[in-house]
Length: 173
Image 1 (cartoon, one colour):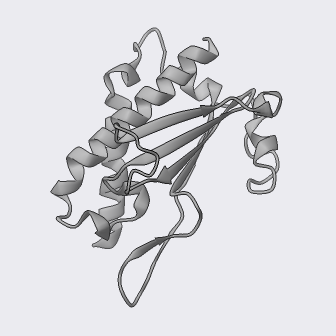
Image 2 (spheres, one colour; image 1 turned 30 degrees about the vertical axis):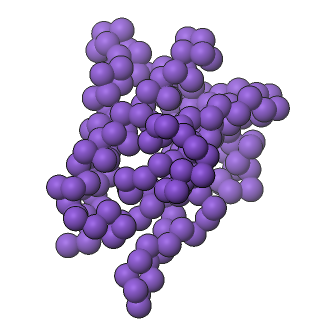
């Protein structure tokens, strides 16, 4: 699979994922601000740092559309000097050493938030709302010839979005 094909799959995945968040969120709450930023229905900018074995994908909130996007989700592929590093090497200070083996189909998500006990509002703990570390092998699994590529129809992305919302609201009850 070429890097261009992987990039396209990532862009499609996040478009389907956030479309499903926007579609399902009203089933759970009438106040979209009552959930952590990573689950909100707002504009966002997604930055993908390409490494030799995968991607570091960082989701930034852009509710005021500061970046002037006409799409709810805007993917920026940062072609940087990280193509000679592994995801584990790039994340070395933040991820335990050897926890992301290059030959494994890893996908690690981190969406830190804190809830103000006084106001009940969710606040970001970092300058971003979500970070995904995903290997090339994991992306390539979306193209299993026997099962056909489920992600192309958005099935995997929409299923994950629904699961993320259910998990959050089940913890709240």
